Image 1 (tube, helix red, strand yellow):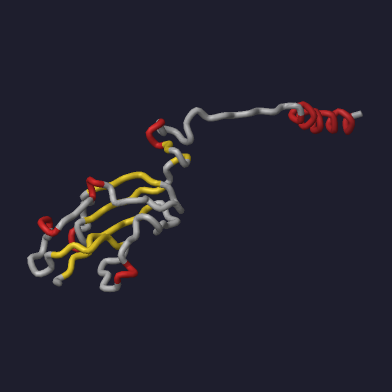
Image 2 (image 1 turned 60 degrees about the horizontal axis):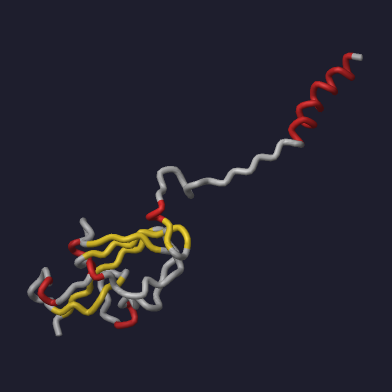
Length: 131
């Protein structure tokens, strides 16, 4: 009799839990998220930091949220650099951004229309040359 009662006490919670189905549909993808973090491709999942150059990488000149594995398309206007913004007079010509600290090879310059990254953070450094 005691074994039967003990078995019933052990099995009863399992049986009552089998019928419990809980569906949760979050209104936001994570706590603190708001609608500005959701774009046409879904939730932004990467932060892109633009720096003047590698030597000045303590503070980005611009940052934006974007999608992993999707090209940005074009350089944001706020991150556009020109020769007048050169920090070093020995290297006054801006040739583009790269995720590498120095890019003497044109293949290492970031191509906004085709390049993408699978990472939560993408750091792009301005590349300046003496031409």
